Image: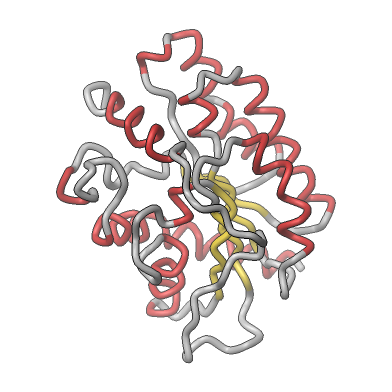
Amino acid sequence: MRRLLPLLVLILAACSQSAPTPEAPNAQASTSLQIPADAPVILAFGDSLYAGYRLAPGQGYPPRLEAALGASGVQARVVNAGVSGDTTAAARARLAFTLDNQKVKPALVMVGLGGNDMLRGLPPAETRANLDAILTELEQRQIPAMLTGMLAAPNMGQDYVSAFNPIFPELAVKHKAPLIPFFLQAVIGNDALMLDDHIHPNPEGVNKIVAATQDEVAKALKAAITRK
């Protein structure tokens, strides 16, 4: 893993590249005739790893997750609210507007942020505070959350790694949120699963990430629905 983590820096660098930001944060949900109109909504709230950087419509994580869940008998509509380059501060600033503009209140919000904070060397205490505030806002709105975590690259220094990496498991415990410890685990270091920039997952890479995470998402959704 140590030899692969320098690649994480490149991945996160690409995540921070400028990409068109939707005019309205109510991102489009993928469509499927097999999904009932009243199916529960999962909001994928994060950065370019959710947004589907350089992928065609339908090839990003949210639509592929929706398709995989449906194929396994879990009917849910997954809405893409990922914005490339988002830091936790930027996401925190747009959270209320994003939620207020959803047509349907999400049954579950997946929070996938923090990588761009690490890339920019932002203080882990700020990352923690912003993620804590995001999860608190969701709690206040009675919307269950799920975290997809990130790891700091070793070249950030041991002090930074020691402060950054515990953020996700500790906040997951504090807010009783299910956790996927490292979102990129299934593809990191495998160029065959990356775009030609060797940075972002290609469609097959997205499928690998979906396969590695869909069961945990399905469990989190079931728990969220049962909680109501």
